[in-house]
Length: 315
Image 1 (tube, rainbow, N blue to C red):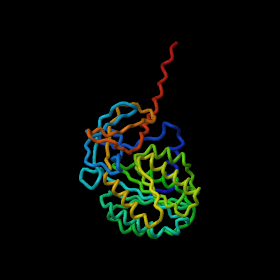
Image 2: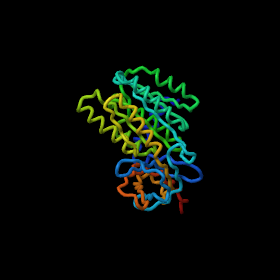
Image 3: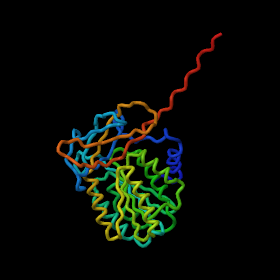
Image 4: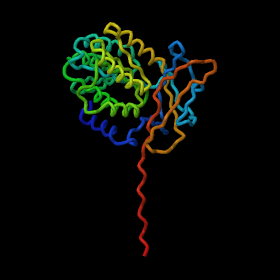
């Protein structure tokens, strides 16, 4: 487990260092890959599965790219290693819903035995993080059940701590965020958080339990959670009550299993830290009115220019 102060220091450093600081996490296997999780839907909103690399087109800033890495979702041996992050709001405002939220989260985790590891971040006034393997599942369940709801909500700090940790992982990264409201106690701002999300390759699924909020607050929190999820290519869900949580978790599991992972080596070798816009399309003949959901790009790696060596003075 990493200390909150150390993790937040790294997170806020990235968020405040200017446009060249954020770096896209990469697979390192002899070459640097830019990786994306991709969800494909037909006109009726059903998942499109069974696609191959030849069925996709990738452009970076308008320039075609060659797919070097490809894996379907699901539980097949070809699927990319899955790292799962669960961010659970345990603030005082969750008191009415916490018991059901705990039970539903545990059932969700039991349905993903292929996850290589699970990082649990529970947060209220403080942020706590621990990583578990499948063999540690009983300890994870105990941890989820033991935390009483209390304190304020350090939502943005919790996201930043997890993203900082996940940047060291390689494979497919999914973050499940369960919260009932806005941030009331973070050092990080919403702008900091959005910058970090853009710089990460984590796909976020947010669950907003907003049934007990006022109309104005509910609308504001919906917008925040939708932005947090959509910038990563994920999705936000807003169940009308705790009895609908099981259905939400089922929908998220279905999407994870239908998701593709692909990667390419950019034809732009400049290490300038700039934002690269990426467009991913399905080009398979016969498929029409297809929706492709993924993150919209990445920040290139940044390498400071070498200082020029002073020449020998002439006399």
